[in-house]
Image 1: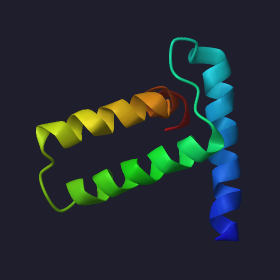
Image 2: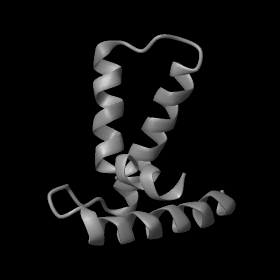
Image 3: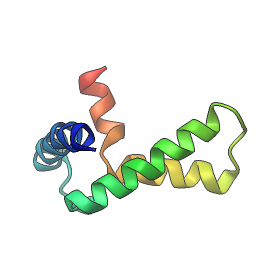
Length: 78
């Protein structure tokens, strides 16, 4: 799991930078919460690859993306 920890170091650093620049109106996530929501998002994306998501799951995915600033980071990193 050490490799995942190092990977989350990078992800969380990026999150903190984006939060400082653009996240003023969004909830700030602790490292623990960031990892928890990221794992939840990954599970939803994996499910979406093989099954249709329910409306509630789609809404939850969008909510998590908002909290993780993924909607912003995609514009800068992809």
